[in-house]
Image (cartoon, rainbow, N blue to C red; front, side):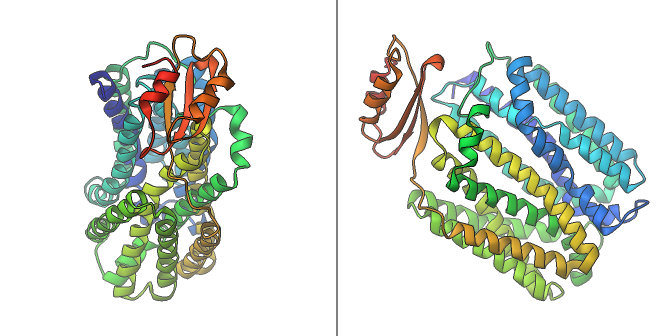
Length: 451
């Protein structure tokens, strides 16, 4: 990437990470804390943990569309202010209802789609994939760091202190946005990075994309529901002190990373994506069955957590890749927007339904619920088609080459390695799905007049 593009990608990744760090730090410590709030019940604890996903999921795409009109940086700042206000409300609340309100406000600052759109504004078509990958790596890294640091910080500053820390992190994000993130020369719609309302219907009716959306929904529903009971099981089964469960999460996550890396290499390099995908869903199902039958056994609990997070990390890495492979080239941003919304709605449903299951039948009922989710996901996964291993490429159109869009698209489809070509004349862009092993980039650029 160019220096300015690298600055844009890393600074926006930092904005993404300071927000996610706070949200994820709460996961391993929230259930025990919330039990001491006035009016608390297991159901309401689940609702408080997951409800930020509802406002986040519903507002993700609208925030992106508003940023097209009012600017990216102002919308990011507004979202971070809402996140800070929600964090302060949660920190000051002594009742479960107050914390629920705070979590709703936290989620209402749904700036994820705006950040990705700003990345697109600030990078060239040739380097946009690298910039998006930088942000994506940050998301995964934030989750793993937060899972370990959350319990450690709770030992020193308490869960209320973590909520106040979120306020501070939001202010850091605002400062980065205002003073470090470059201001784009122009704001425009990027079909590869943000949702286009006219394409939402066609994306929703795409069966292969729907399978992947079901997957991310189930994955995060399982994760959120599990964190309602797993921390308590760790303290009861392993007899570890409150907030010392990071000692378990750290080695479990390290092992899961060691499993994930070769799995993704096999999936991508050797084109075994469906096999790796299905195996990961099976691993998730097995982990939930083990937790249902052996949660109070030391070895079964540790093994189940290791298997779960191994499958979880493989999915977190492979699902976005599959979305880009399956989505039409000019609807990639729309597909990713809906995918992200389903992820957050999964968090909400996992918290609410998991809280109800915990109140009704305890940990066993929660793991029965998550096992059923994993089984339904497995049934959807085994029927998926083998992915095409195509990647999206954007080719700028210059010198009047796009005067006849359909004619140019037909010529681009004849280029070696090109499977799909869509030309959008008003954007002066050709959206291609290509096999990177055989794609003749020079020939495509020549046809588009950009060589």
